[in-house]
Amino acid sequence: MARSIDPPQDASEVTPRRSARAILAGSAGTFIEWYDYGLYAYVAGIVFAPLFFPPGAGSAATIGTFGAFAAGFVARPIGGIVLGALSDRWGRRPVLLASIVLVGTATAAIGVLPPYAAVGVWSPVLLVLCRVAQGFGTGAEPGTAMVYVNESARPRTKGFQTSFLYNATMAGSILSLVFFAVINLAIGQAAFVAWGWRIPFLFAGVLTVIALILRRGMEETAEYQRVEEARARGLIARSKANPLAAVRAAFVASPRNYVAAFLMPTASNVIGYVANAFGISYMANQLKLSFSQTALALLVMYLAGVVALPLWGKACDRWSAKTVLLIGAVAGILLAFPYFALLGTRNMVLVVIAGAVLWAACWSPSVVAQLVIGPVLFRTESRAAGFTSSRELQQALVAGPTPLLAAALIIQLDGAPWLVAGLILVAQVVTVFSIKLGRPQLSAAEIGAVPAHRGLAVAEPAPAKS
Image (cartoon, helix red, strand yellow):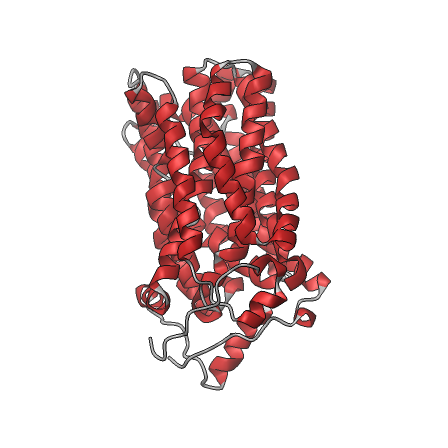
């Protein structure tokens, strides 16, 4: 393939209106993704374990429920590889439309699954199949949306604008939590377990229709349009039709960047799934907190993220995304053990503070910085294939198994959380290593045009062929 160097982004190509519309459209699917995944996390330990698994299974049912959770993550890299490659070949828009339909439909289908008492072993099998379908669609949804929003944000405010993509994730999580809590309290625990839990899952179908309306008028990014023009002139070859070949081309272009993109989300993924999916089970089963106490702790944690995310986005534009990523990692190292120590007091004020501080000071800066740095580890013509596949491999190998691994580590110390705290600490070190390893595909001029890119290394020379 001919060597290609993207010119510095012209701010006039990304008008404020076009940028705002793109961020709204890109964030709509991410909102639904986290609404869906939030629902599963909340319902899993309380409803799914006794409903979809044999009576008397005990802790095995909890492990099985989180195993189904992990199954969705196994499907994610497959979806990321297939749909990410298509995003580079056909465009970001059609893939973002297709992925949201798949995710929303699979989530709504969980809402009509029969219990174990009705169909026996088919109940957990169907649950896993829905999770696999959901995971396949989600494999492309967040990665392609991140690429789309990153390419659509204005250069001088790239950190601030891209942060709203993760604000959509917090909004989705908050809606699912509030919906879950309101229905539970309105109809009672018994009715909720029997049938009420299905309502928020079925509501995902309504949200999917709204997201499709928002995305219907979305435009391709200026960066992708430049690539299409270069392809039309024969300057750049069209992306590979074979998804594996497309991912291989992205990997061969810069193996170290591919590895860096895979490792970079480790800190945020481990913190996110320890505090969220695993945290719900830990607070309910180990700390014996009530449903309302657990819901309150999670709600305040998410609200802390809503406030912190745009502030860290502005910090990226002022100090650089690299600095913000390192701040989040250092905070994670310092707060991992105190977080569990505060949870162990069972004092609700301290429990709420622990979750809010961990989410605002560790998770939030990490994810915002990744939105700025991650996509530019790859060139525009292979960006979605490279970024999405590397990110989703991380989801399958690290994020998905994290609640399961944390549950196993808790058992090793008879309920003590210190091995899980150590897991958080190790994850921060991995992310720090990734930022040292990566060489974003940016020229000196491009780095100078985007304040959030300050401090990043100049791109490696592009290979003459792939």
